[in-house]
Image 1 (spheres, rainbow, N blue to C red):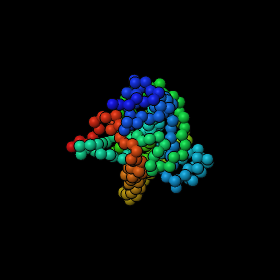
Image 2 (cartoon, rainbow, N blue to C red):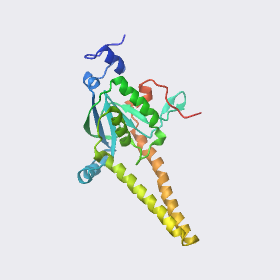
Image 3 (cartoon, helix red, strand yellow):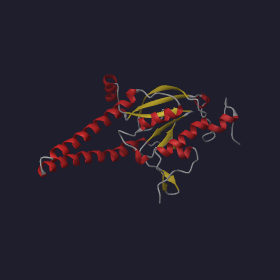
Image 4 (cartoon, rainbow, N blue to C red):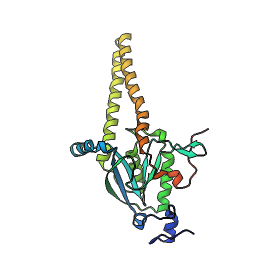
Length: 245
């Protein structure tokens, strides 16, 4: 027989559910407060982030959003989806503040959501479908971008600019380099075959650098898999979205 959760009404308890016969603390489950957890990528990044945060109001952070007692985040990690399939979802959860790889830095309160636990669950399932692991990009679609999207769904925020700044700056620099390479190729091409060959080489070099971002994103983000959580699809008992075949 399912035990009752102290301080929870049966309706809320049925929405939240229990974990191994043990409910989350009522203070966590009942609270509509949404918090953003920031992590240094590892303890070796703490000193650098301190400098970046103090000097430039930026940092290389992993982020997770806490709502109704669980922390949600986005990763490029491709996980087993059951029945020999590979789930393409990159949305995971774990216990708040207990990431096993990244170093916890701070929590930032973002306001209270007006959603019920069941409504929040539906939003998570929709995001799980939209944010695939193969779509992860270290500059343009990472855990920070997911946190912004989730907070928007929850009606809270905004995510502080300093959390988003490094990704935005990196993406802008990458775009500028690509634009400069395109312009160089167009200008030099008018001077003949030799110059066009040089310009094409520059463009190819830029393309090769860009092509490494995807695999690098997967490598970095794969470290965010934890054993005290898992896929959102599994958490809410939905058949995982899987790759064909």
